[in-house]
Length: 213
Image 1: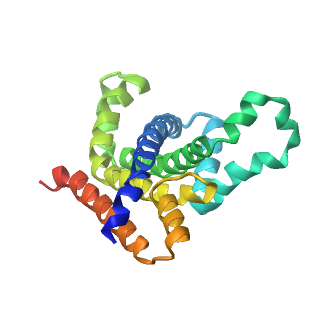
Image 2 (image 1 turned 120 degrees about the horizontal axis):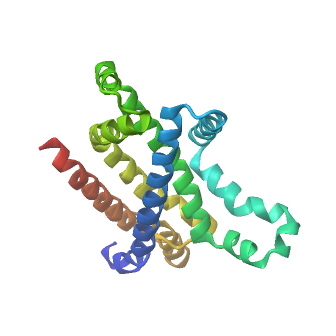
């Protein structure tokens, strides 16, 4: 079983880079969407709520398939070579799907933390004559700090979700596992993949350790 680990580790770099990039993009989007929901910006707030409903209500695998295979149903996109090339890249499609999916859940997490702020703190800022912008500048960091421990779980979920990227030909850990199984028909390949999954769980425990201390 362990002789398969070096081959499987080749896909670990892809999994890690995809995770980091997805988390960064998702975090930026989530911050923007959280502010929109908090300020109750007309029209935009309904668009954000619709987006959250869509991406939290459908399976991630379906989202990956739609983003990767969907553009192929529109031949007119081939008239734009750069756009067509980008939409044909498995890594970029996986990044887009993971980012949009994670951003939806992260927005819910952050917005929930903001709504959990005691009403008295909002009233205190208003009594001091602060604008809504200044109030958010003070209370948002407080809310995000409270949501940090839960957000670490979302980071781990994104890491684990990268295993779905092999379904669109992206060679990450699971992709290399399927390739090895196709060559050897040795089910212990998946045992070696399980070792990688246990490593991921170790990273999860490591991420949560500072918050449990």
